[in-house]
Image (cartoon, rainbow, N blue to C red; front, side, top):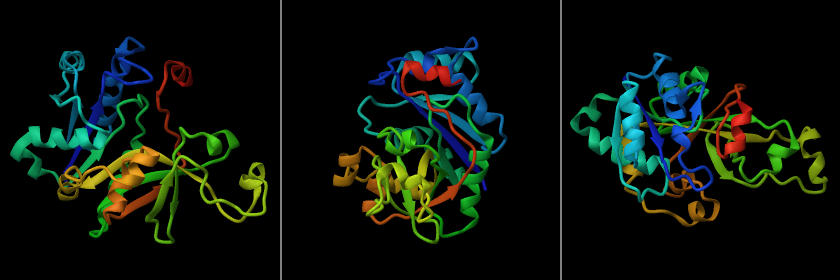
Length: 246
């Protein structure tokens, strides 16, 4: 199985403009992400997809590969779609394509390994990860995306609100009950190549627009998302103050 890793990296982030180029230990963030993916040995090729020449130049400076994409994309996966068009016929060499968040400088090799194992099942179309929520701050934060799954590990729904709702129990007690576990979504996606090529042709859907979650577009169009569980935390840099997490 040949695997391509794509890292969408947008300069004009609303909450943190220039984020991919912020310096961490004398390296731009995008270099940390690229090296973290490349050094796992799990992917056969790593490509940064960006809309900004400054990021293109930074990637070239550390010896990475990048492609220029448009400024109009609504999601990281849409940007990946243009990237695979720019790669051209070579894209047919790859069985699985992983969309890796460009704002997670501490890329977890465990996450990459786990999400790729989903494709040992020939029926898997899309794979992603989840982790148990252990505190109320995460449960209540709209920046923490929650996921609920069926008994086969396929996603039923993603939301910025806590799911499921437990009737008759105060919300602050939900994590203490034994009725269910709550899970947050770890934002890494892997796709069969031919599935990704179809997904990026789909227009935005009502649920996606409501929650601002691109995976709902795929589900609204009948695609299944296999969700595997990890105990490894991810550290995303959404705003400048998040750098303190590192």
